[in-house]
Image (tube, rainbow, N blue to C red; front, side):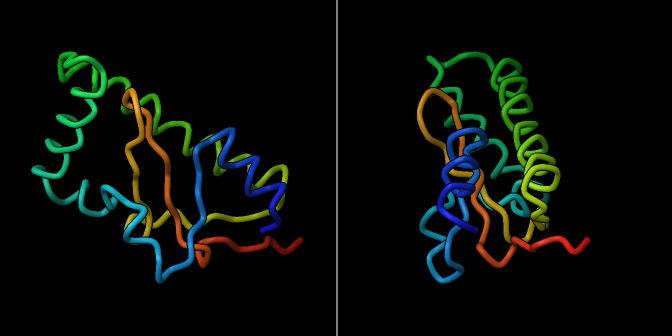
Length: 117
């Protein structure tokens, strides 16, 4: 992926593509763990709530869902505009919490595929 596309995806969708051997230090929560481990979900909600002035869990959950939907928009944008397919398998995708409840989506570079027409 060229630098222009990479910067576009970071700036518009908070999507980062990291070398496989370096990815774990960039992830706070692996998506697969969130799916299978309720304690991980609780930790994520607690941390995001603290970042957002200790708002109620239902508000944090709603904001999380809204922000997570940005991933779908980025996925579609990669396909339609750049003809790049992103493998969003939960085993290798992750979330990095930033500030004010925001989050980045972290993928290994190997999750990117050029589409074939």
